Length: 307
Length: 322
Image 1 (cartoon, rainbow over the protein chains, first blue to last red):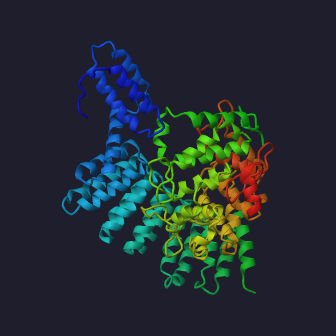
Image 2: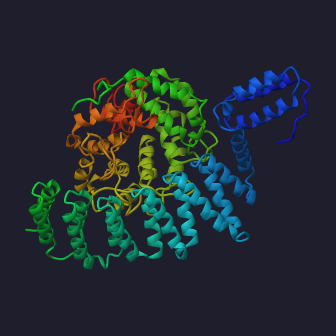
Image 3: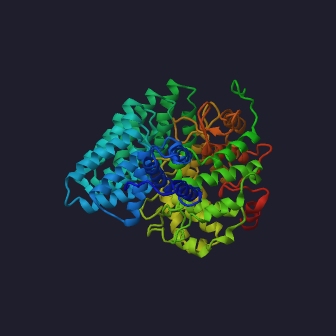
Protein backbone atom coordinates (compact mmCIF):
# COMPACT_ATOMS: atom_id res chain seq x y z
CA UNK A 1 0.00 0.00 0.00
CA UNK A 2 1.47 3.40 -0.91
CA UNK A 3 2.34 5.65 1.98
CA UNK A 4 -0.25 8.32 2.55
CA UNK A 5 1.00 11.78 3.33
CA UNK A 6 -0.78 13.62 6.10
CA UNK A 7 -4.20 14.64 4.72
CA UNK A 8 -5.41 18.18 5.04
CA UNK A 9 -8.59 17.13 6.80
CA UNK A 10 -8.03 13.73 8.47
CA UNK A 11 -11.36 13.75 10.37
CA UNK A 12 -13.33 14.14 7.16
CA UNK A 13 -11.34 11.41 5.47
CA UNK A 14 -11.79 9.00 8.35
CA UNK A 15 -15.52 9.75 8.42
CA UNK A 16 -15.76 9.03 4.75
CA UNK A 17 -13.88 5.76 5.12
CA UNK A 18 -15.92 4.75 8.16
CA UNK A 19 -19.09 5.29 6.24
CA UNK A 20 -17.79 3.14 3.42
CA UNK A 21 -16.92 0.46 5.93
CA UNK A 22 -20.37 0.49 7.44
CA UNK A 23 -22.23 -0.02 4.21
CA UNK A 24 -23.36 -3.51 3.34
CA UNK A 25 -20.91 -3.96 0.53
CA UNK A 26 -18.24 -6.64 0.93
CA UNK A 27 -16.82 -7.28 4.38
CA UNK A 28 -13.44 -7.81 2.81
CA UNK A 29 -13.18 -4.19 1.73
CA UNK A 30 -12.98 -3.49 5.45
CA UNK A 31 -9.57 -5.10 5.32
CA UNK A 32 -8.45 -2.60 2.73
CA UNK A 33 -9.91 0.18 4.80
CA UNK A 34 -8.10 -1.06 7.87
CA UNK A 35 -4.82 -0.85 6.03
CA UNK A 36 -5.60 2.67 4.95
CA UNK A 37 -6.55 3.66 8.47
CA UNK A 38 -3.28 2.35 9.80
CA UNK A 39 -1.48 4.36 7.18
CA UNK A 40 -3.53 7.36 8.17
CA UNK A 41 -2.60 6.84 11.78
CA UNK A 42 1.05 6.86 10.84
CA UNK A 43 0.62 9.94 8.72
CA UNK A 44 -1.29 11.76 11.45
CA UNK A 45 1.15 10.89 14.21
CA UNK A 46 1.54 13.76 16.53
CA UNK A 47 -1.57 15.46 15.27
CA UNK A 48 -4.49 15.98 17.58
CA UNK A 49 -6.57 13.56 15.61
CA UNK A 50 -4.21 10.64 16.29
CA UNK A 51 -6.14 9.18 19.21
CA UNK A 52 -9.40 9.62 17.41
CA UNK A 53 -8.13 7.80 14.32
CA UNK A 54 -6.75 5.00 16.49
CA UNK A 55 -10.20 4.63 18.06
CA UNK A 56 -11.84 4.48 14.63
CA UNK A 57 -9.38 1.83 13.48
CA UNK A 58 -10.27 -0.28 16.49
CA UNK A 59 -13.93 -0.01 15.58
CA UNK A 60 -13.28 -1.91 12.36
CA UNK A 61 -14.34 -5.52 12.98
CA UNK A 62 -11.54 -7.12 11.05
CA UNK A 63 -8.97 -5.75 13.45
CA UNK A 64 -10.95 -6.17 16.66
CA UNK A 65 -11.61 -9.88 16.16
CA UNK A 66 -7.98 -10.86 16.17
CA UNK A 67 -7.83 -11.35 12.43
CA UNK A 68 -4.36 -9.97 12.14
CA UNK A 69 -3.70 -6.97 9.98
CA UNK A 70 -1.40 -9.09 7.89
CA UNK A 71 -4.16 -11.66 7.30
CA UNK A 72 -6.54 -8.90 6.31
CA UNK A 73 -4.05 -7.51 3.84
CA UNK A 74 -3.37 -10.95 2.41
CA UNK A 75 -7.05 -11.57 1.84
CA UNK A 76 -7.74 -8.18 0.32
CA UNK A 77 -4.74 -8.64 -1.95
CA UNK A 78 -6.11 -11.99 -3.05
CA UNK A 79 -9.52 -10.56 -3.96
CA UNK A 80 -7.80 -7.89 -6.04
CA UNK A 81 -5.77 -10.55 -7.81
CA UNK A 82 -8.94 -12.53 -8.57
CA UNK A 83 -10.52 -9.49 -10.15
CA UNK A 84 -7.44 -9.10 -12.37
CA UNK A 85 -7.33 -12.86 -13.10
CA UNK A 86 -3.57 -12.85 -12.61
CA UNK A 87 -1.76 -16.18 -13.01
CA UNK A 88 1.84 -16.08 -11.76
CA UNK A 89 4.27 -17.55 -9.27
CA UNK A 90 3.59 -14.78 -6.81
CA UNK A 91 -0.15 -15.49 -7.02
CA UNK A 92 0.49 -19.21 -6.61
CA UNK A 93 2.38 -18.36 -3.43
CA UNK A 94 -0.37 -15.97 -2.33
CA UNK A 95 -2.96 -18.76 -2.53
CA UNK A 96 -0.87 -20.70 -0.04
CA UNK A 97 -1.03 -17.77 2.37
CA UNK A 98 -4.80 -17.48 1.94
CA UNK A 99 -5.35 -21.20 2.43
CA UNK A 100 -3.27 -21.17 5.59
CA UNK A 101 -5.57 -18.46 6.95
CA UNK A 102 -8.72 -20.31 5.94
CA UNK A 103 -8.27 -23.85 4.68
CA UNK A 104 -11.83 -23.98 3.36
CA UNK A 105 -11.39 -20.97 1.10
CA UNK A 106 -12.76 -22.49 -2.09
CA UNK A 107 -11.69 -19.69 -4.45
CA UNK A 108 -8.09 -19.85 -3.25
CA UNK A 109 -7.86 -23.59 -3.93
CA UNK A 110 -9.49 -23.19 -7.34
CA UNK A 111 -7.17 -20.35 -8.35
CA UNK A 112 -4.15 -22.22 -7.02
CA UNK A 113 -4.94 -25.06 -9.42
CA UNK A 114 -5.16 -22.64 -12.35
CA UNK A 115 -1.70 -21.35 -11.48
CA UNK A 116 -0.18 -24.78 -10.89
CA UNK A 117 -1.44 -26.17 -14.18
CA UNK A 118 -0.36 -23.14 -16.16
CA UNK A 119 3.09 -22.75 -14.61
CA UNK A 120 4.30 -26.34 -14.11
CA UNK A 121 5.91 -26.81 -17.49
CA UNK A 122 8.19 -23.80 -16.93
CA UNK A 123 8.67 -24.37 -13.21
CA UNK A 124 9.07 -28.08 -12.50
CA UNK A 125 9.95 -27.36 -8.86
CA UNK A 126 6.26 -26.63 -8.28
CA UNK A 127 5.53 -30.35 -8.15
CA UNK A 128 7.63 -30.94 -5.04
CA UNK A 129 6.37 -27.71 -3.53
CA UNK A 130 2.81 -28.86 -4.08
CA UNK A 131 3.42 -32.19 -2.37
CA UNK A 132 4.93 -30.47 0.65
CA UNK A 133 2.14 -27.90 0.83
CA UNK A 134 -0.62 -30.52 0.63
CA UNK A 135 1.14 -32.54 3.34
CA UNK A 136 1.21 -29.47 5.59
CA UNK A 137 -2.44 -28.65 5.09
CA UNK A 138 -3.43 -32.26 5.79
CA UNK A 139 -1.68 -32.12 9.14
CA UNK A 140 -3.75 -29.04 10.01
CA UNK A 141 -7.05 -30.62 9.05
CA UNK A 142 -7.32 -33.95 7.26
CA UNK A 143 -11.11 -33.69 6.85
CA UNK A 144 -11.17 -30.61 4.67
CA UNK A 145 -13.28 -31.17 1.52
CA UNK A 146 -11.28 -28.65 -0.52
CA UNK A 147 -7.99 -30.31 0.34
CA UNK A 148 -9.21 -33.68 -0.89
CA UNK A 149 -10.89 -32.30 -4.02
CA UNK A 150 -7.60 -30.63 -4.89
CA UNK A 151 -5.58 -33.71 -4.05
CA UNK A 152 -7.87 -35.80 -6.28
CA UNK A 153 -7.31 -33.42 -9.19
CA UNK A 154 -3.57 -33.47 -8.47
CA UNK A 155 -3.48 -37.28 -8.43
CA UNK A 156 -5.36 -37.52 -11.71
CA UNK A 157 -3.02 -34.98 -13.25
CA UNK A 158 0.08 -36.88 -12.14
CA UNK A 159 -1.40 -40.19 -13.28
CA UNK A 160 -0.58 -43.83 -12.49
CA UNK A 161 3.17 -43.65 -11.85
CA UNK A 162 2.51 -41.22 -9.03
CA UNK A 163 -0.07 -43.53 -7.46
CA UNK A 164 2.16 -44.87 -4.69
CA UNK A 165 2.81 -41.36 -3.37
CA UNK A 166 -0.93 -40.74 -3.29
CA UNK A 167 -1.61 -43.96 -1.42
CA UNK A 168 1.18 -43.07 0.99
CA UNK A 169 -0.42 -39.68 1.59
CA UNK A 170 -3.82 -41.26 2.25
CA UNK A 171 -2.20 -43.84 4.52
CA UNK A 172 -0.53 -41.10 6.56
CA UNK A 173 -3.96 -39.53 7.11
CA UNK A 174 -5.41 -42.91 8.06
CA UNK A 175 -2.67 -43.42 10.64
CA UNK A 176 -4.10 -40.36 12.39
CA UNK A 177 -7.73 -41.36 11.84
CA UNK A 178 -8.28 -44.87 10.50
CA UNK A 179 -11.81 -44.05 9.33
CA UNK A 180 -11.17 -40.77 7.51
CA UNK A 181 -13.83 -40.98 4.81
CA UNK A 182 -11.97 -38.73 2.37
CA UNK A 183 -8.77 -40.74 2.67
CA UNK A 184 -10.51 -44.04 1.88
CA UNK A 185 -12.38 -42.47 -1.04
CA UNK A 186 -9.08 -41.07 -2.32
CA UNK A 187 -7.53 -44.53 -2.16
CA UNK A 188 -10.45 -45.87 -4.21
CA UNK A 189 -9.88 -43.31 -6.94
CA UNK A 190 -6.11 -43.89 -7.04
CA UNK A 191 -6.35 -47.69 -6.90
CA UNK A 192 -8.88 -47.65 -9.75
CA UNK A 193 -6.66 -45.36 -11.82
CA UNK A 194 -3.55 -47.48 -11.36
CA UNK A 195 -5.14 -50.93 -11.12
CA UNK A 196 -3.55 -51.69 -7.75
CA UNK A 197 -6.28 -54.08 -6.65
CA UNK A 198 -4.24 -56.84 -5.03
CA UNK A 199 -2.16 -54.39 -3.04
CA UNK A 200 -5.30 -52.66 -1.79
CA UNK A 201 -6.86 -55.95 -0.72
CA UNK A 202 -3.72 -56.62 1.28
CA UNK A 203 -3.85 -53.13 2.75
CA UNK A 204 -7.39 -53.68 4.02
CA UNK A 205 -6.20 -56.92 5.61
CA UNK A 206 -3.47 -55.03 7.46
CA UNK A 207 -5.93 -52.40 8.68
CA UNK A 208 -8.30 -55.12 9.90
CA UNK A 209 -5.41 -56.71 11.82
CA UNK A 210 -5.13 -53.41 13.71
CA UNK A 211 -8.87 -53.02 14.20
CA UNK A 212 -11.17 -55.77 12.99
CA UNK A 213 -14.16 -53.44 13.47
CA UNK A 214 -12.98 -50.79 11.01
CA UNK A 215 -16.04 -50.54 8.78
CA UNK A 216 -14.16 -48.48 6.19
CA UNK A 217 -11.68 -51.32 5.65
CA UNK A 218 -14.48 -53.87 5.21
CA UNK A 219 -16.19 -51.52 2.77
CA UNK A 220 -12.94 -51.06 0.88
CA UNK A 221 -12.55 -54.81 0.63
CA UNK A 222 -15.92 -55.12 -1.06
CA UNK A 223 -14.99 -52.25 -3.36
CA UNK A 224 -11.88 -54.14 -4.51
CA UNK A 225 -13.88 -57.35 -5.01
CA UNK A 226 -16.58 -55.65 -7.07
CA UNK A 227 -14.09 -53.85 -9.26
CA UNK A 228 -13.18 -57.03 -11.13
CA UNK A 229 -16.52 -58.70 -11.78
CA UNK A 230 -14.97 -61.48 -13.89
CA UNK A 231 -12.92 -62.64 -10.93
CA UNK A 232 -15.34 -62.06 -8.11
CA UNK A 233 -16.90 -65.54 -8.32
CA UNK A 234 -13.55 -67.20 -7.52
CA UNK A 235 -12.94 -64.94 -4.61
CA UNK A 236 -16.21 -65.24 -2.75
CA UNK A 237 -15.24 -68.48 -1.00
CA UNK A 238 -11.85 -67.12 0.09
CA UNK A 239 -13.55 -64.00 1.40
CA UNK A 240 -16.14 -66.05 3.27
CA UNK A 241 -13.29 -67.92 4.99
CA UNK A 242 -11.56 -64.63 5.77
CA UNK A 243 -14.77 -63.26 7.30
CA UNK A 244 -15.34 -66.45 9.27
CA UNK A 245 -11.87 -66.15 10.85
CA UNK A 246 -12.55 -62.54 11.84
CA UNK A 247 -15.94 -63.44 13.31
CA UNK A 248 -14.35 -66.09 15.50
CA UNK A 249 -12.04 -63.39 16.86
CA UNK A 250 -14.85 -60.92 17.49
CA UNK A 251 -18.33 -62.40 16.97
CA UNK A 252 -20.24 -59.19 17.64
CA UNK A 253 -18.89 -57.29 14.65
CA UNK A 254 -21.63 -55.75 12.51
CA UNK A 255 -19.24 -54.84 9.72
CA UNK A 256 -18.17 -58.45 9.29
CA UNK A 257 -21.76 -59.72 9.32
CA UNK A 258 -22.80 -57.09 6.77
CA UNK A 259 -19.85 -58.16 4.64
CA UNK A 260 -20.83 -61.81 4.82
CA UNK A 261 -24.42 -61.01 3.82
CA UNK A 262 -23.00 -58.88 1.01
CA UNK A 263 -20.97 -61.86 -0.25
CA UNK A 264 -24.15 -63.90 -0.26
CA UNK A 265 -25.67 -61.50 -2.78
CA UNK A 266 -22.87 -62.03 -5.32
CA UNK A 267 -24.55 -63.97 -8.10
CA UNK A 268 -21.31 -65.49 -9.35
CA UNK A 269 -20.52 -67.00 -5.94
CA UNK A 270 -20.45 -70.75 -5.18
CA UNK A 271 -23.74 -72.63 -5.58
CA UNK A 272 -23.72 -73.71 -1.91
CA UNK A 273 -23.03 -70.20 -0.57
CA UNK A 274 -26.17 -70.20 1.56
CA UNK A 275 -25.05 -73.35 3.32
CA UNK A 276 -21.53 -71.98 3.77
CA UNK A 277 -22.93 -68.87 5.43
CA UNK A 278 -25.32 -70.86 7.61
CA UNK A 279 -22.41 -72.99 8.77
CA UNK A 280 -20.48 -69.86 9.71
CA UNK A 281 -23.47 -68.62 11.76
CA UNK A 282 -23.80 -71.99 13.48
CA UNK A 283 -20.10 -72.14 14.35
CA UNK A 284 -20.15 -68.64 15.82
CA UNK A 285 -23.27 -69.41 17.83
CA UNK A 286 -21.62 -72.52 19.23
CA UNK A 287 -18.96 -70.36 20.80
CA UNK A 288 -21.21 -67.36 21.48
CA UNK A 289 -24.82 -68.50 21.82
CA UNK A 290 -26.08 -64.98 22.61
CA UNK A 291 -24.55 -63.32 19.60
CA UNK A 292 -27.53 -61.34 18.27
CA UNK A 293 -26.10 -60.44 14.86
CA UNK A 294 -25.32 -64.14 14.26
CA UNK A 295 -28.94 -65.03 14.92
CA UNK A 296 -30.20 -62.13 12.82
CA UNK A 297 -27.91 -63.08 9.94
CA UNK A 298 -29.04 -66.68 10.20
CA UNK A 299 -32.64 -65.54 9.82
CA UNK A 300 -31.78 -63.41 6.80
CA UNK A 301 -29.90 -66.24 5.13
CA UNK A 302 -32.72 -68.72 5.75
CA UNK A 303 -35.21 -66.29 4.29
CA UNK A 304 -33.04 -65.71 1.24
CA UNK A 305 -32.37 -69.39 0.65
CA UNK A 306 -33.73 -70.61 -2.67
CA UNK A 307 -36.46 -73.20 -2.15
CA UNK B 1 -33.71 -43.48 30.48
CA UNK B 2 -32.58 -41.05 33.19
CA UNK B 3 -31.45 -37.60 32.14
CA UNK B 4 -27.74 -36.82 32.21
CA UNK B 5 -26.76 -35.19 35.52
CA UNK B 6 -27.01 -31.44 35.19
CA UNK B 7 -29.60 -31.58 32.42
CA UNK B 8 -33.30 -31.07 32.89
CA UNK B 9 -34.42 -33.40 30.11
CA UNK B 10 -36.61 -30.71 28.58
CA UNK B 11 -36.17 -28.66 25.43
CA UNK B 12 -35.17 -25.09 26.27
CA UNK B 13 -36.96 -23.54 23.30
CA UNK B 14 -36.49 -19.89 24.26
CA UNK B 15 -32.77 -20.33 24.87
CA UNK B 16 -32.28 -21.96 21.47
CA UNK B 17 -34.21 -19.18 19.76
CA UNK B 18 -32.07 -16.60 21.51
CA UNK B 19 -28.85 -18.48 20.66
CA UNK B 20 -29.75 -18.54 16.96
CA UNK B 21 -30.75 -14.87 16.86
CA UNK B 22 -27.60 -13.81 18.69
CA UNK B 23 -25.51 -15.89 16.32
CA UNK B 24 -27.24 -14.32 13.32
CA UNK B 25 -26.29 -10.85 14.51
CA UNK B 26 -22.69 -11.59 15.52
CA UNK B 27 -20.87 -10.09 12.57
CA UNK B 28 -17.87 -9.05 14.65
CA UNK B 29 -16.43 -12.50 15.13
CA UNK B 30 -13.58 -14.40 13.52
CA UNK B 31 -16.04 -17.23 12.93
CA UNK B 32 -18.18 -14.91 10.81
CA UNK B 33 -15.29 -14.38 8.41
CA UNK B 34 -14.11 -17.95 8.33
CA UNK B 35 -17.63 -19.22 7.53
CA UNK B 36 -18.26 -16.72 4.75
CA UNK B 37 -18.02 -19.29 1.97
CA UNK B 38 -21.00 -21.29 3.23
CA UNK B 39 -22.97 -18.62 5.07
CA UNK B 40 -26.09 -19.12 2.96
CA UNK B 41 -26.42 -22.66 4.30
CA UNK B 42 -25.84 -21.34 7.81
CA UNK B 43 -28.71 -18.91 7.32
CA UNK B 44 -30.95 -21.73 6.10
CA UNK B 45 -30.13 -23.81 9.21
CA UNK B 46 -30.82 -20.84 11.47
CA UNK B 47 -34.08 -19.61 9.97
CA UNK B 48 -35.54 -23.10 9.53
CA UNK B 49 -34.65 -23.99 13.11
CA UNK B 50 -36.37 -20.81 14.30
CA UNK B 51 -39.42 -21.62 12.18
CA UNK B 52 -39.61 -25.10 13.70
CA UNK B 53 -39.33 -23.54 17.17
CA UNK B 54 -42.14 -21.13 16.29
CA UNK B 55 -39.81 -18.13 16.62
CA UNK B 56 -39.27 -17.04 13.02
CA UNK B 57 -40.73 -13.61 13.75
CA UNK B 58 -37.59 -12.79 15.81
CA UNK B 59 -35.55 -12.26 12.65
CA UNK B 60 -35.71 -9.54 10.02
CA UNK B 61 -37.18 -11.66 7.22
CA UNK B 62 -37.08 -8.85 4.69
CA UNK B 63 -33.42 -8.19 5.36
CA UNK B 64 -32.62 -11.88 5.09
CA UNK B 65 -34.45 -12.28 1.79
CA UNK B 66 -32.63 -9.25 0.42
CA UNK B 67 -29.28 -10.68 1.50
CA UNK B 68 -30.14 -14.08 0.01
CA UNK B 69 -30.94 -12.51 -3.34
CA UNK B 70 -27.64 -10.61 -3.24
CA UNK B 71 -25.86 -13.98 -3.27
CA UNK B 72 -27.17 -14.78 -6.74
CA UNK B 73 -24.71 -14.63 -9.63
CA UNK B 74 -25.14 -13.97 -13.34
CA UNK B 75 -25.19 -17.71 -14.10
CA UNK B 76 -28.40 -18.08 -12.07
CA UNK B 77 -26.79 -19.97 -9.20
CA UNK B 78 -26.07 -18.72 -5.70
CA UNK B 79 -22.76 -18.45 -3.84
CA UNK B 80 -22.28 -18.93 -0.11
CA UNK B 81 -22.05 -15.16 0.31
CA UNK B 82 -22.11 -12.17 -2.03
CA UNK B 83 -19.06 -12.18 -4.35
CA UNK B 84 -18.66 -15.93 -4.01
CA UNK B 85 -18.88 -18.23 -6.99
CA UNK B 86 -22.08 -20.21 -7.50
CA UNK B 87 -22.41 -23.67 -6.04
CA UNK B 88 -25.32 -26.11 -6.19
CA UNK B 89 -25.42 -26.41 -2.37
CA UNK B 90 -26.02 -22.72 -1.73
CA UNK B 91 -28.48 -22.52 -4.59
CA UNK B 92 -30.70 -25.00 -2.75
CA UNK B 93 -30.28 -23.16 0.56
CA UNK B 94 -31.36 -19.94 -1.15
CA UNK B 95 -34.46 -21.55 -2.66
CA UNK B 96 -35.38 -23.21 0.66
CA UNK B 97 -35.14 -19.89 2.48
CA UNK B 98 -37.28 -18.18 -0.16
CA UNK B 99 -39.91 -20.92 0.11
CA UNK B 100 -39.89 -20.47 3.89
CA UNK B 101 -40.60 -16.74 3.51
CA UNK B 102 -42.98 -17.24 0.58
CA UNK B 103 -40.74 -15.14 -1.67
CA UNK B 104 -40.00 -17.71 -4.35
CA UNK B 105 -41.51 -15.40 -6.96
CA UNK B 106 -38.53 -13.08 -6.47
CA UNK B 107 -36.27 -15.45 -8.42
CA UNK B 108 -36.54 -16.43 -12.03
CA UNK B 109 -37.27 -20.14 -11.67
CA UNK B 110 -36.21 -20.88 -15.24
CA UNK B 111 -32.86 -19.21 -14.70
CA UNK B 112 -32.11 -21.13 -11.51
CA UNK B 113 -33.29 -24.43 -12.98
CA UNK B 114 -31.14 -23.79 -16.03
CA UNK B 115 -28.08 -23.32 -13.82
CA UNK B 116 -28.79 -26.63 -12.10
CA UNK B 117 -29.60 -28.60 -15.23
CA UNK B 118 -26.21 -27.63 -16.69
CA UNK B 119 -24.55 -29.38 -13.74
CA UNK B 120 -26.00 -32.76 -14.72
CA UNK B 121 -23.48 -35.12 -16.30
CA UNK B 122 -24.05 -37.71 -19.02
CA UNK B 123 -24.17 -40.54 -16.44
CA UNK B 124 -26.96 -38.81 -14.55
CA UNK B 125 -24.75 -37.54 -11.71
CA UNK B 126 -24.40 -33.88 -10.75
CA UNK B 127 -21.30 -31.80 -10.19
CA UNK B 128 -21.39 -29.13 -7.48
CA UNK B 129 -19.89 -26.28 -9.50
CA UNK B 130 -17.33 -25.56 -12.19
CA UNK B 131 -14.65 -27.40 -10.20
CA UNK B 132 -16.40 -30.65 -11.15
CA UNK B 133 -16.71 -32.57 -7.91
CA UNK B 134 -19.38 -35.31 -8.12
CA UNK B 135 -21.27 -36.40 -5.00
CA UNK B 136 -24.71 -37.92 -4.38
CA UNK B 137 -25.42 -34.91 -2.16
CA UNK B 138 -25.59 -32.88 -5.36
CA UNK B 139 -28.09 -35.33 -6.89
CA UNK B 140 -30.45 -34.67 -3.98
CA UNK B 141 -29.82 -30.93 -4.06
CA UNK B 142 -30.58 -30.75 -7.78
CA UNK B 143 -33.80 -32.76 -7.56
CA UNK B 144 -34.95 -30.99 -4.40
CA UNK B 145 -34.26 -27.53 -5.79
CA UNK B 146 -35.93 -28.17 -9.13
CA UNK B 147 -38.94 -29.74 -7.44
CA UNK B 148 -39.38 -26.66 -5.23
CA UNK B 149 -39.12 -24.48 -8.33
CA UNK B 150 -41.62 -26.69 -10.15
CA UNK B 151 -39.01 -27.33 -12.85
CA UNK B 152 -38.21 -31.00 -12.30
CA UNK B 153 -38.75 -31.59 -16.00
CA UNK B 154 -35.52 -29.65 -16.70
CA UNK B 155 -33.52 -32.58 -15.38
CA UNK B 156 -33.11 -36.09 -16.66
CA UNK B 157 -34.78 -37.54 -13.58
CA UNK B 158 -34.55 -41.14 -14.71
CA UNK B 159 -30.79 -40.94 -15.23
CA UNK B 160 -30.40 -39.05 -11.97
CA UNK B 161 -32.15 -41.92 -10.16
CA UNK B 162 -30.04 -44.50 -11.99
CA UNK B 163 -26.86 -42.78 -10.91
CA UNK B 164 -28.01 -42.69 -7.30
CA UNK B 165 -28.86 -46.39 -7.52
CA UNK B 166 -25.35 -47.08 -8.83
CA UNK B 167 -24.00 -45.77 -5.51
CA UNK B 168 -25.87 -48.46 -3.57
CA UNK B 169 -23.53 -50.69 -1.59
CA UNK B 170 -23.51 -54.34 -0.52
CA UNK B 171 -24.95 -53.34 2.88
CA UNK B 172 -27.87 -51.46 1.33
CA UNK B 173 -26.38 -48.06 2.18
CA UNK B 174 -25.04 -45.30 -0.06
CA UNK B 175 -21.80 -43.36 -0.39
CA UNK B 176 -20.68 -40.20 -2.20
CA UNK B 177 -19.81 -41.93 -5.46
CA UNK B 178 -20.06 -45.60 -6.56
CA UNK B 179 -18.11 -47.85 -4.17
CA UNK B 180 -17.65 -45.27 -1.41
CA UNK B 181 -18.46 -46.48 2.10
CA UNK B 182 -22.09 -46.26 3.23
CA UNK B 183 -22.64 -43.18 5.35
CA UNK B 184 -25.85 -41.95 6.98
CA UNK B 185 -25.56 -38.48 5.44
CA UNK B 186 -25.28 -39.96 1.97
CA UNK B 187 -28.09 -42.40 2.78
CA UNK B 188 -30.42 -39.50 3.55
CA UNK B 189 -29.64 -37.64 0.32
CA UNK B 190 -29.99 -40.80 -1.76
CA UNK B 191 -33.28 -41.88 -0.18
CA UNK B 192 -34.70 -38.36 -0.46
CA UNK B 193 -33.47 -38.08 -4.06
CA UNK B 194 -35.08 -41.39 -5.01
CA UNK B 195 -38.27 -40.30 -3.27
CA UNK B 196 -38.43 -37.10 -5.36
CA UNK B 197 -37.60 -39.16 -8.46
CA UNK B 198 -40.40 -41.57 -7.56
CA UNK B 199 -37.87 -44.41 -7.58
CA UNK B 200 -37.84 -45.79 -4.08
CA UNK B 201 -38.14 -49.25 -5.64
CA UNK B 202 -34.42 -48.99 -6.40
CA UNK B 203 -33.64 -49.36 -2.71
CA UNK B 204 -32.46 -52.55 -1.07
CA UNK B 205 -34.43 -53.71 1.99
CA UNK B 206 -31.12 -54.21 3.86
CA UNK B 207 -30.97 -50.43 4.13
CA UNK B 208 -33.71 -50.46 6.74
CA UNK B 209 -31.67 -52.74 9.02
CA UNK B 210 -28.54 -50.70 8.37
CA UNK B 211 -30.36 -47.53 9.40
CA UNK B 212 -31.85 -48.99 12.57
CA UNK B 213 -28.40 -50.33 13.52
CA UNK B 214 -27.16 -46.73 13.69
CA UNK B 215 -28.63 -46.35 17.18
CA UNK B 216 -25.97 -46.70 19.88
CA UNK B 217 -26.32 -47.82 23.48
CA UNK B 218 -26.69 -44.24 24.69
CA UNK B 219 -29.64 -43.62 22.39
CA UNK B 220 -27.82 -41.39 19.91
CA UNK B 221 -27.33 -42.31 16.26
CA UNK B 222 -24.00 -42.68 14.46
CA UNK B 223 -23.19 -42.32 10.79
CA UNK B 224 -21.40 -45.62 10.19
CA UNK B 225 -20.85 -48.81 12.21
CA UNK B 226 -18.51 -48.42 15.19
CA UNK B 227 -18.48 -44.62 15.09
CA UNK B 228 -19.53 -42.25 17.83
CA UNK B 229 -23.11 -40.90 17.90
CA UNK B 230 -23.64 -37.37 16.64
CA UNK B 231 -26.79 -35.25 16.82
CA UNK B 232 -26.78 -34.51 13.09
CA UNK B 233 -27.49 -38.18 12.44
CA UNK B 234 -30.74 -37.64 14.30
CA UNK B 235 -31.75 -35.99 11.05
CA UNK B 236 -29.89 -37.98 8.42
CA UNK B 237 -30.99 -41.40 9.67
CA UNK B 238 -34.37 -40.38 10.96
CA UNK B 239 -35.52 -38.58 7.85
CA UNK B 240 -34.55 -41.56 5.72
CA UNK B 241 -36.49 -43.91 8.03
CA UNK B 242 -39.40 -41.51 8.01
CA UNK B 243 -39.55 -41.39 4.21
CA UNK B 244 -39.52 -45.19 4.25
CA UNK B 245 -42.26 -45.34 6.88
CA UNK B 246 -40.03 -47.00 9.48
CA UNK B 247 -39.55 -44.31 12.11
CA UNK B 248 -40.68 -46.81 14.73
CA UNK B 249 -37.58 -48.93 14.07
CA UNK B 250 -35.62 -46.51 16.28
CA UNK B 251 -36.08 -46.19 20.04
CA UNK B 252 -37.43 -42.65 19.84
CA UNK B 253 -37.46 -42.01 23.58
CA UNK B 254 -33.78 -42.87 23.87
CA UNK B 255 -32.93 -40.71 20.89
CA UNK B 256 -34.92 -37.75 22.18
CA UNK B 257 -33.14 -38.04 25.53
CA UNK B 258 -29.80 -38.08 23.72
CA UNK B 259 -30.61 -34.94 21.73
CA UNK B 260 -31.84 -33.16 24.84
CA UNK B 261 -28.64 -34.08 26.67
CA UNK B 262 -26.69 -32.27 23.94
CA UNK B 263 -28.31 -28.92 24.72
CA UNK B 264 -26.52 -26.02 26.34
CA UNK B 265 -29.36 -25.27 28.75
CA UNK B 266 -27.84 -21.97 29.89
CA UNK B 267 -26.92 -20.25 26.63
CA UNK B 268 -28.94 -22.31 24.16
CA UNK B 269 -27.82 -24.27 21.14
CA UNK B 270 -27.19 -27.97 20.62
CA UNK B 271 -23.85 -29.73 20.11
CA UNK B 272 -22.84 -32.93 18.35
CA UNK B 273 -22.66 -34.88 21.56
CA UNK B 274 -23.02 -34.08 25.28
CA UNK B 275 -20.66 -31.49 26.76
CA UNK B 276 -19.26 -30.37 23.39
CA UNK B 277 -19.52 -26.81 22.06
CA UNK B 278 -22.78 -25.91 20.33
CA UNK B 279 -23.16 -24.65 16.78
CA UNK B 280 -26.02 -23.69 14.48
CA UNK B 281 -25.60 -26.79 12.31
CA UNK B 282 -26.21 -29.24 15.16
CA UNK B 283 -28.85 -26.97 16.69
CA UNK B 284 -30.86 -27.19 13.49
CA UNK B 285 -30.48 -30.93 12.99
CA UNK B 286 -31.19 -31.71 16.65
CA UNK B 287 -34.39 -29.67 16.53
CA UNK B 288 -35.36 -31.15 13.17
CA UNK B 289 -34.86 -34.65 14.55
CA UNK B 290 -37.10 -33.84 17.54
CA UNK B 291 -39.72 -32.45 15.14
CA UNK B 292 -39.72 -35.68 13.15
CA UNK B 293 -40.42 -37.55 16.37
CA UNK B 294 -43.32 -35.22 17.20
CA UNK B 295 -41.68 -33.60 20.21
CA UNK B 296 -44.28 -31.37 21.92
CA UNK B 297 -44.13 -27.67 21.18
CA UNK B 298 -42.37 -28.01 17.84
CA UNK B 299 -43.69 -27.81 14.29
CA UNK B 300 -43.83 -30.86 12.03
CA UNK B 301 -41.03 -31.05 9.48
CA UNK B 302 -40.94 -32.53 6.00
CA UNK B 303 -38.36 -35.35 5.90
CA UNK B 304 -37.62 -34.95 2.18
CA UNK B 305 -37.39 -31.17 1.86
CA UNK B 306 -36.30 -30.31 5.43
CA UNK B 307 -38.84 -27.48 5.71
CA UNK B 308 -41.68 -26.94 8.22
CA UNK B 309 -44.91 -28.79 7.52
CA UNK B 310 -47.03 -26.70 9.88
CA UNK B 311 -47.90 -23.02 9.84
CA UNK B 312 -46.45 -20.67 7.35
CA UNK B 313 -45.88 -20.61 3.66
CA UNK B 314 -43.54 -23.56 3.37
CA UNK B 315 -46.17 -25.79 4.90
CA UNK B 316 -48.89 -24.62 2.54
CA UNK B 317 -46.56 -24.98 -0.40
CA UNK B 318 -45.53 -28.51 0.51
CA UNK B 319 -49.01 -29.63 1.45
CA UNK B 320 -50.44 -28.37 -1.81
CA UNK B 321 -47.78 -29.74 -4.08
CA UNK B 322 -46.55 -32.98 -2.58
